Length: 370
Image (cartoon, rainbow, N blue to C red; front, side):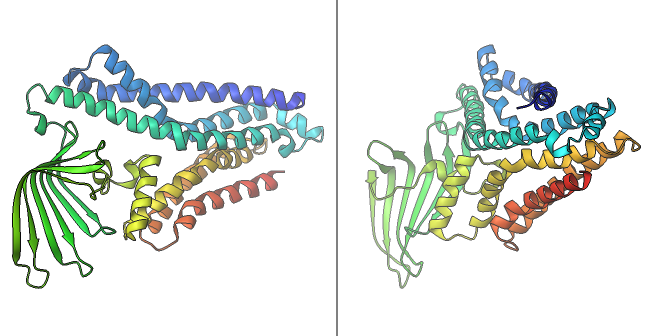
């Protein structure tokens, strides 16, 4: 690494860390403004509040990183250009690519960092913050409500096509991890009802690897006529071949944009086995999160050429063009996700298309500037 590389990298990385810290701080202040009152309302103490915001903070990195890279590059390269340092290096025969090669290598490294954040840190942060918030809510509700009324998700419906079973629960309590008013219908190959399990409550027992139903009735039906053939009440019934995961049941209808990387992966595996038409939207979102790891390179490609535009051009013009391309990038991402979710384009194209287009544009402008 030459003196030029070290100098430019030192200027840029210092500004990157400053912008990253400032932006994260602003988002943290916004989160505190939005959530602080609600946390106090559910009886959260100082330790609870500090822990909640500590685990929530990393989830902002996916939003902050591209913005921080863009702003820091525009400022750093613009300052070098205004101070005629870019002009001096060009006069000495140093090309723009040669000047910025250190930035490109760091950009590749940031792609790896982005991958690590998207696949481990950010999903953990999203799920842990949600868990902490729910735990505080449950603790507060438990003071005035019965346990089965705390953390309730109403009208839970789940279809297991692979096993030909349909579940319905009047409500599911995240606090007790139990469903109430549970009905499980088993179907034959022609999707005709064969048996029906109804119970006041049911829960999954990890120790027995089985679902336990309490205070209910099992009914057998004639598949041809639908008439009841036999019915048998029970106080408790353990069904070992029911292996549905209750945590999966609760996220099957959640918007893909609200799910973590881990939850998306679980749902994709489930919907693939089910051959469900819902699969496409989740696959598009999953591949989109993977493709977002190219973000640092895309931001570098669209920031550098315009930050060092000609000396006769107002620097604000170049910065405006760069920010405009940045906005266009996100418009293309949203449009591509919409088309992919509707099945008009394949998930891989929906995920990689906008990234490939913008990276190609950035490289084009780099060569044109040179």
